[in-house]
Image 1 (cartoon, rainbow, N blue to C red):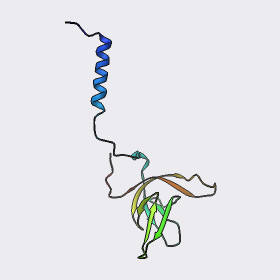
Image 2: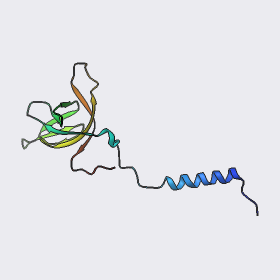
Image 3: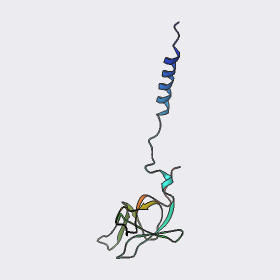
Image 4: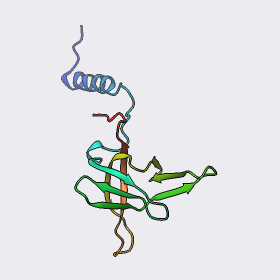
Length: 120
């Protein structure tokens, strides 16, 4: 019986290892969880910007927001495409918006509604 040389057996082992470790469930996490670490409460008054009140009292004004009143007179609020409601607690990740230097708006780079399943 012919023996397999060491380099060939090493290559075979690496191939088998890569095949078995590449199997699994698709990734559910789109944004790394460690960027979404700031608790905030949504605050909105008609005619003004949506604000996020942080636990330490600081106020963030998200840059990418919309407040649209539907035919029933209800205002639908969105931050970065995520539907929110007045008084809702959310977890966000943010950074200063890339706008004018005197702008105090922030880019929300991740958002999770409290009560949602948070993957670990």
